[in-house]
Length: 281
Ligand code: SF4
Image 1 (cartoon, helix red, strand yellow):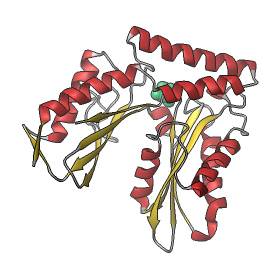
Image 2 (tube, rainbow, N blue to C red):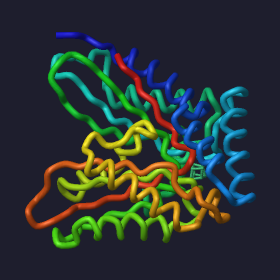
Image 3 (cartoon, rainbow, N blue to C red):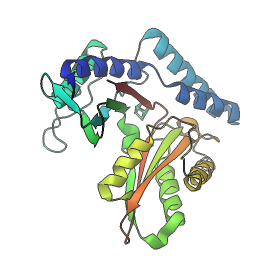
């Protein structure tokens, strides 16, 4: 049995949260540069230029990439042979969030209650934590800082099996079309297909964690990702919604088995400020 103290979790998650709020991943930066090379609209090119400059400045000067420093989502993969010591794991993650947002002066964006008490919790907690138990003695925590300009544009539908690929395409394209400029395009689109209602939503969010440019290992879904990306980039929404060819940087599809009566289909939209990282202990 391997022991991991929750203080290790707290320190590692805190450091990674500060880092990902300031440093955009090289995959996103490369995709923005490729978008700049492909964009034909002068306004679209100017926007992409500014986004790239913003990302470089944020990393150089240790500033947040965006004022919306989001809600923290953690996908935890915990080995069954790990014994977590030194307190509550969930509290360690929340302490990491508290410390990171306080010390790096990141905006607190979480309210206590969705309806009746929309007062700020004051420290960006609680994080949304998903736990997956696996064999072995490893602990991996994938972190995402999710802005809600894009989260609000996400959608889920329980499609009929007869809707097939065409139904999925319609859902993805209509979701991005309806979103227009709201999710700060160019967007990254996570699609979750299969499982149940909630599993599809989780898959769509996990899809956003895949490095940009890495296709689905299933050639059928890799082809679907390519053609959905082409469809989205024909919408003309463009960078910042000001028109152009580059509406989306990538589409990632994740799947799992489902019931004979349904195609649960979720679309989770991320803005260009796709901030994520990983802690491995
Ligand atoms: S959607 Fe993204 S880029 Fe736009 S304000 Fe929110 S976090 Fe920032």
